[in-house]
Structure formats: structure tokens, C-alpha cells
Image (cartoon, rainbow, N blue to C red; front, side):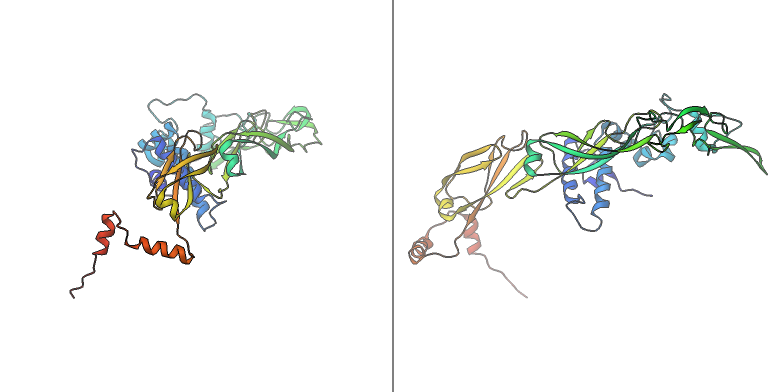
Amino acid sequence: MDKKDYYDVLGVDKSASDAEIKSAYRKLAKQYHPDINKEEGAEAKFKEIQEAYDVLGDENKRRQYDQFGHAAFDQSSAGAYGGAGGFGGFDASGFDFGDIFDNIFGGGFGGFQGGSARSRAQAGEDRLMRIRLSFEEAVFGCEKDIKLEVNEKCDECNGKGGTGEETCSECHGSGTVTKEQRTLFGTFMSKTTCNKCGGRGKTYKNRCSYCGGTGRIISKKTITVSIPKGVDTGNRLRISGKGEAGINGGPNGDLYLEFVVDKHEFYERDGDDIYLKVPINITEAVLGTKKEIPTLFGNVKLTIPEGTNTGDKQRIKGKGINKGDMYVIMDVRVPKKISRDQKKLFEELEDTELDDSTIKDFDNFTIRNDR
């Protein structure tokens, strides 16, 4: 199936820096996160954005993608394009050629014998959990108690599923059963997983009653996780070894925490920068004033110059998240009701000369219609 270009998904150029890619991902992840955006198609768009960032946010994967495109990560094209090592510099370490022949020829090729995949140690599956944080928890970091329900190795049988280990009488310990198939093109050997031992190559005299022979049990536990400062919606934190239990003595998978950060009543966040809209009255705007501004780290006194307009912005360095800045946006409020005396004062100001060429040009502006 055709996929969109990952650069187009994130809305960046192919020459974009790592910082630009990360910034684009953050904005899009916040916009389309399914816990925030309830529109139809938002979740699919979020997954597309996540997939694109998983590649472009990784230096090695991005280099492969730039060279081979989506084929770099297409298993069916890995051999042809070099996405999983490729030809020319192919690294065979860690590859089991028995598995390769099994996948291609269904378990047998000229009498080729390979080991059972199920009898080898396999890492457990990773897990993904979404964690909701308040604005303050995300900014300053916090500790969270996470309740987990995962499959763990059964201690009663040490994850084997029983006691009294015996070599499987059906497959003789190989974990597979080889069958001969005669066709018009000759005789072929096919290999399938042994039904008796489930591919382990071993059976047990006594089935473990605690885990029912599966070797794993469902466990409920609570772990305390330290959330670092400055996380944002869509960010993920990896907790090593807290995923599903491994198989046949393999390591546990990992737990990934994905954050959803609540919006603040007054602050707006853009990456590590903070924006705050500050209302001022018309007198403060005209004459200027000093105002106490609440920042993330306490109040500061800000000088507002005379002649301030709505939308004017002042920067307070270092008062954002981590090393970000804070920006104060002025919002001049015009009174809806005034007294008679106040009205007279405004009428006296009506003839005030405004030193603004834009206003003068507007006063002389007319629309011509020669048709």
C-alpha cells in the first residue's frame, strides 16, 4: 500500500534540521492526539505522524529512508534494498539462516533442518500506556504511581509450565514435525510446529497448576515513575523491563508511557516557550504602567510603556519551560460603560493628534468604482 512521504506528513523540507522535525512533530501530535482531538480520522492521522517521526527522528533510520524511501523498512524489500542490512556491507550477526529458509520454503528445503523458534528465548512484548498530566506536573516534573496488569514469569515452575521435563516423543526435541509432500514437480519436505509440545521440544510430566501450563501469570502491581521536567503531549518515556514477560527465559519487554498534558487556564505553551495574555485598561495603555506578572517561577514587575496597543509583546528571558522564555501579550480592554465625567474626558481627547501615518492614510482612503 502506498504511503505518504514522511516529510510531507510532518510538513517539513527534506533539508529540515533535527530540531525543526522535532518541533513539527510536537505541534502535530498535540493537534491530532486522540485524547484531545475527537474528530473522525484524528487517531489515524496521529498514528501516521508518530510513524513518520519514529523514522525521521532517528538519525540512522532517516539516512536509510532518504536513500531507499519506504522500501528501507519494507520486510518484503529488505533484501533488495538493504533496509535490514542489505547487500554490500551486510551484517549476518544475530541472523538465524534456519529461520530464513523456514520462512521462504515453509519449513523444508532439500532436507534442511532448523531449530524451533518457540524453543528459543524470546523477548516479551512492549506495552504502551497513556498518562494524563496537569500543566504544572508536566512543567516541573513529578512522581506518578502507575498501576500495571502484566504477564509475568510463573515462579512456581520458573516459567516452564510444569515439572518433570521430558523430550517430546512426537518431534524428538526439535519442536517441529517434518512431512513429505509429493507433487507433479517432485517431492518436497514441509516443516510445521509440533502440536504436542507447542514447538518447545519438551513436555512435562506434571502440569503447573498455578499458571495452567502457560509458564506465565497475570500480575497486578504499582510502580512509581519519575516524570522529567518539560514533557509535552505526545512525548514518550521508556521504562525498561516493565512490559510483558519474555518467553523461554527471554527478557521482559519495555513499558512506554505516552503523555497527555492538560491545558492551562491562562498560559499557552509552544515547545519550551510560554505565552500569557495580560489585560490592561485604556489608561494603563496610554500612560504606561508597572504591573506584577505571574510567571512559572513567581511574580516579576514588568514595565509597560506608554502608547501600548493590543497585541504588543514583551519577552521575559528564561521564564519559560526548562531554558525557554516567557512572552507577555498585551490585551487593551476598552470600557463598555463610563460615567458622564469620563465621557467628557474622552470627548476632550477626540481632537488629539495621533502620530500614526497608517491612521492618516486610512482617513483619506476611498473606494473607487468606475463601472
